[in-house]
Length: 132
Image 1 (cartoon, helix red, strand yellow):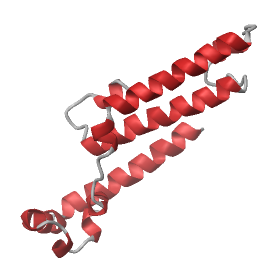
Image 2 (cartoon, rainbow, N blue to C red):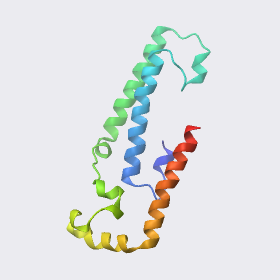
Image 3 (cartoon, rainbow, N blue to C red):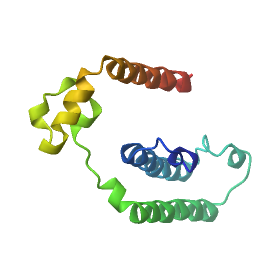
């Protein structure tokens, strides 16, 4: 998560996605550990772990989750407009007045449209590759 939040090209939307995903994973980890399913923690799988230790691990994950939510509340409450994700599919009048001219410039730029479309497909194929 730390590396995903670094760099010059990281946007608030990307940060929200990364943080939200991590918080969701903490919940998943807690539930799995509570059921003695250690897929995400392979080193625990071969150990004899007492119920007290499992409870401590689950409590730690819950505290970590609460801390992450508290630290990133402003980011998690961010609601980016839907048109932001498909700027080539919206009419300029639906965006705020101060962005309409810039949106028209963007929509008129054929190179940017191709770049935007390629990025969507690139993300799709990266996601598919990660599933394998």
